[in-house]
Length: 444
Ligand SMILES: *Cc1c(COP(=O)(O)O)cnc(C)c1O
Ligand SMILES: [Zn+2]
Image 1 (cartoon, rainbow, N blue to C red):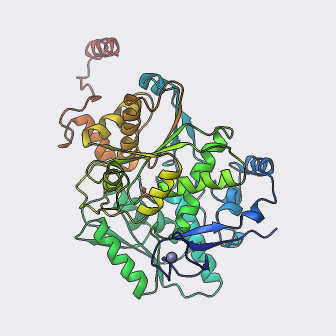
Image 2 (image 1 turned 45 degrees about the vertical axis):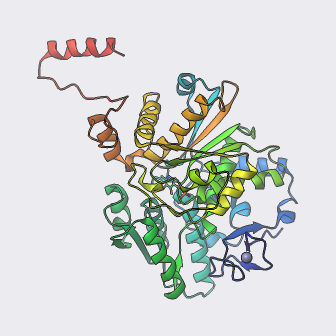
Image 3 (image 1 turned 180 degrees about the vertical axis):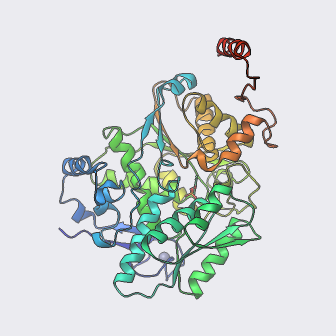
């Protein structure tokens, strides 16, 4: 069977474009493109067959199927030949059933999809393996690609640099100077990317890279390029697979440029179309109150996007005021009976720390999603009858300044951290250590 997919305009214009073509917007109306799969070809296997195929490939010990993304090859990127796959073993991440945390919240079940458990420490790896593999395929087919480039709040550039380095493709990353974490900055540097730190914000970097892609023969690696979303949509498929194909009641996901929620929706839609699941979950997008254009549009009854200047937030990867995938996100949220929540700096930091007490180690963006979950609970939308999945988007090990600052009490935006925990510093003396131990254990 030959599987295939192509770019189409999301506004429904005529025409489809091969996935190896350098094209980011509809040439007729300028709107975003999306990847559309040949469903008839995919439907030549039954839903039960696909479930079995995915079960057989799950975390294969070696080869392409050791990757969660490439274990779904036909559904994701049928245009990439096996020899051009550039994989770092991404995906197939744990879905952690956080039982004690759910009890504390008063929710039936909470599962945390640990997308940060991956090579560069964020879910961006899932999309970047597809994008860079496509570029490798294009180069193998003789296309002239000078380099791959992206604007980034940190995690996209880390992923692009790693996959490009593994493939031997030149990479340039454009970052807002001084606005990303040290760990995020050092990743593309270590991987040998050309790092351009520009005195602007993410939205300013995004405008520059779009012009470079249009004029200078560099291939655009931002999520406006919907190839990325094809890899990211495997998060939805993995969640369903890990819940034995039972659809959760809620999926809560932090949103910035809004590609990832669009991908989540696309994954569930494809499973519905092919009969692997029989209903949709409700989706909640969580935004930082300091960068909340989607929240504002939602609160105004799905108004048009009004770009806002994004204010500094601890959730730096979602400090975006003019989200590229706004329209796709609204479409997904409408289809999934969706809601949008926002979280203040103190709310996101305390929510992350509260989950940590039960075994998580939540990055600030995951904290935004956890704060949204708390709000859905207090509004009675998520209850003891419900199973909720929170998408954790990055490893907190990339955001140690946030974690350390919280517990040291030095974050200006979080003057009174509620779950602060400090080391007890003691002299080299058995009695002192023993007393501190007994006192400390009693207080827990
Ligand atoms: C990119 C990113 C997001 C936001 O994803 P969008 O697709 O831009 O909405 C959230 N969290 C982390 C850690 C990210 O790197
Ligand atoms: Zn169009």
